Length: 320
Image 1 (cartoon, rainbow, N blue to C red):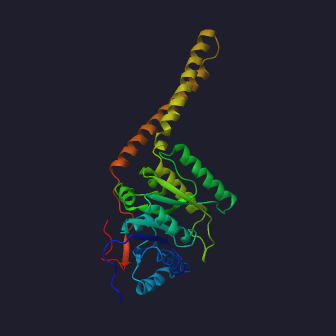
Image 2 (cartoon, rainbow, N blue to C red; image 1 turned 45 degrees about the vertical axis):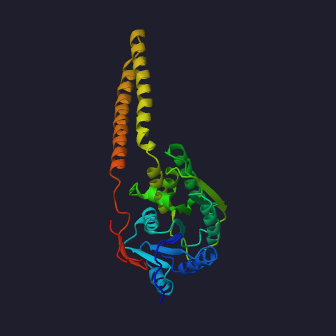
Image 3 (tube, rainbow, N blue to C red; image 1 turned 135 degrees about the horizontal axis):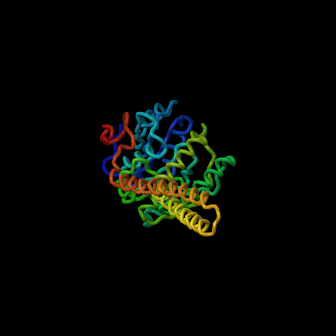
């Protein structure tokens, strides 16, 4: 049997998977087929997020045949943010390509990703030209983009799922944040490194069905919005300012009614009620700012816990 690769490869391809027994062999073959003509120094890392089918078994057989294929098996499902990001952190390539295992990301783009990275672009992302989904999911997706654009601390690239290539410097910059729920496509922009995009059409799936549904996509969108925007924590302060402004108007109305002989009790009641809500939102806003500061100072949590890993130079599971 051939020995494991020594030294860092030029390219690492990280493939997140869960219940993809119909796709993992085909996606590995497709990725290897497009990489071999342009580089002999690469690795494929599958990270499995508690598959309930034969996905892990099939990848283990692939690992036995091809030592450039590696496998990380999580102890449980750690979600769509943490598991792929942990896989990216375990890659040793000078550049890392992240993609899904179900063919929703086109392997044909990999040579162009690598060409642009070699030319000096630290981040190159694939952007889907269109999304085929129902009216409800389309609405939720557009709403998510609008909210992130309005409240986010940095711009989000619409229809960019994170499929792309990242220079090692980019990966290490994101790793240093110790983000416990890493919205990776947002963190890529947060680093400030230059980003190029390539539009592509979503290819047909080789088999199986998507693991996503309305609730998983909603959870992903909400986590992404929360993870990419600290302005939301300050939103109650803006609401408090607006309510206090109305409170002042109501107070002036009560004073005016009192001196003009009109009923002033309702004006005063409204002012007191509005003042209470204003104080409540002021407190929530200050609390939100404190939470943001605590979050910045305590980012230190293991993304996943590994059950096992195969075909790494050191097959000991990664420590938290």
